[in-house]
Length: 397
Image (cartoon, rainbow, N blue to C red; front, top):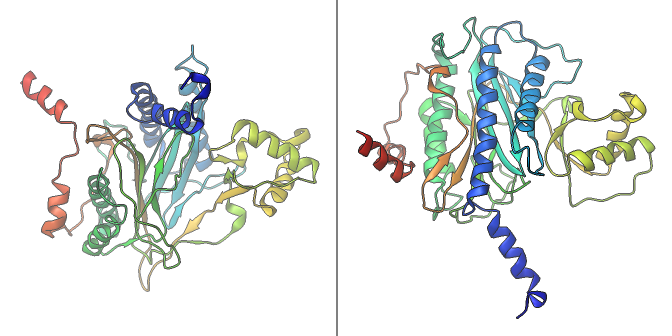
């Protein structure tokens, strides 16, 4: 068969193969995006102090991501940008709180602040989320971060243990429905709830939430087919736990500012403002999430963004990321904690967590509860590291 007679499906398969982790250039781009995400988080954490405005903090991260992305791969024509706008969700807010320009919310001591964001290089995405309890001491890596106590400590310890277990269960040959039962057992130990409906998504090039998903706690109306996890895949392992009920709900639709283009929907827009906004979205954010703060105002009028967005939403041309809340159980408090990291399932069988927080910038969770179930302890003891790196370390010694 000549080149001209090649089967289009074969060409598509080859193109797909070139975009997975067998390609060293792809791995390099994932890791470069992760390095920027990590660097932005390290810059942000010392700024999470009482009195800081959420909008200023989120803009700091977004601006830094754009600046860092602009400084790399300069000689190549690659698309680079924010893959998920910086969100800062406090206390019982489950997620997606991305402040508008006129937002006046500030941090106060004791706030449980969940920061969630990510960027991409050539469509290869690195996201992460971290929970920080606000105190008067800056988390700068030099000043010791005050330990977390009480029910917040239970939630922090629970979320981290769940994350550590999940990354050991999300391995080639495992099934996507093998994770939630283990997470439920861990949550019971700490007296917490896995927040219903939150899922770990496979990520692909320009796809932040792929169809292969791992439910942490399936909702009653949520049917997810079991699938086999394969080497070469990339996942955003996302764990959200709560000391409250564990049922997220939207309170005010007007708080939603994060959206993504619904690629399977089309409609011939009637309003000029809607067409202008939609054109901007298709040009600059054709596949990945954005916040309305990023949009160019039609005719220089910010009011036309809201007007245009209404027609887009009325005809389901956008997917919304609503601000969600959990609520406390009777006579209790509601603290929501999130841990998320990007995991590369390398073709050789080991896992590489490319987004992470320096240990010295993480508060110790002084919980009086601990896991004693042997099955879970065995899972947590499983190594996910590259065996080659271990051998290299031994040689150096």
